[in-house]
Image 1: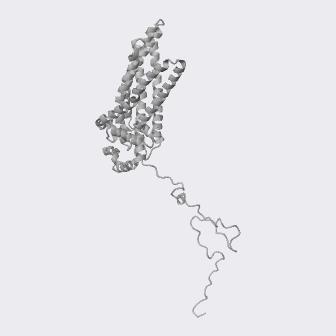
Image 2: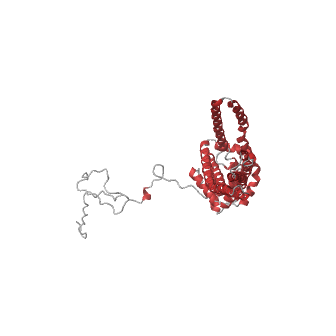
Image 3: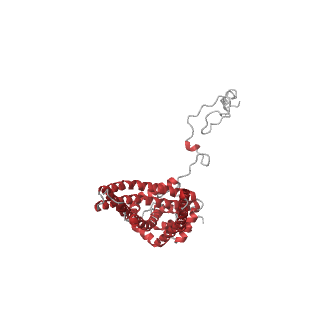
Length: 413
């Protein structure tokens, strides 16, 4: 040892088993779970457990399929999410459409319903007036009973007039509701006056669609009615067995005709929306509806049929109390003119309230189902999402949103 240098300090001895140990990685829990107890090297002690718990939950999250990854919710600037719609989305969107535009949806529907309900209410009031007279006069003859209701025109004239008035009014209402829906998808609102200004140029196409659809629905009757009358004469001379055959044939023809009506209504249910939102003519709009329904006919038929049942149930529940009161007033009034007028007013109010709810529900569901079919068959949701993002950036829904519904904006032909 040389001078001027003190003794070399000894290096402290490292305990055996720890020389090669490294700090445990983040989240380590001590010895490997695959090491059997007692298999450690001689003198080696297991490291103490870490003072911290497991890593935060977000550190253990593995995005991707099979790891519980949930995609972000679809953009929803208005009444529906901008993605293909389920049944719940369609009904929920219809309710939101009515609630977000009550003046347009319910106000216009009330006017339309009143125009269609008044003729029917008058015919029913005439019938109830005669029934009140019949009950009040027990000595009524059979001839008086035959004249009850004013004959065929008195009983069915109001209904026939109501059908034509309803066809015109509902056609106009459907077109205006389609315009309201076209903005509501983006969260925008328009007034009844604005909706009319947008729709009045499409009235010809709308009435063309309504006329062609009605012609298709009535066309089979031109053949069915003469054949039915001919067969009735033939079967009438066959006795009881012939009567049973005749009833069976009538039921079969009735079922086939109902199936035909459902088929036509489903196939051309989007024609009004195509005529208004896409600017197509009557024939082109009906062809467009046929193409959109193709590939998803049974779903479209099921949703429209379910909607019709629900709407009619709601309408009937609202109408029944007014009909009962009107019937009681007519009977108690003994056929007086005042009782007939009160009955007509009550029935008109009930019919108006019921139809005021039923019309927007059916039109709203048809419009949203049309939107859903375009999303599924043309990737139209991508067009709507792009437009909605731009509108959110600008902070308002502008009138150019109406042009997005043109078929040229579809992502796929």
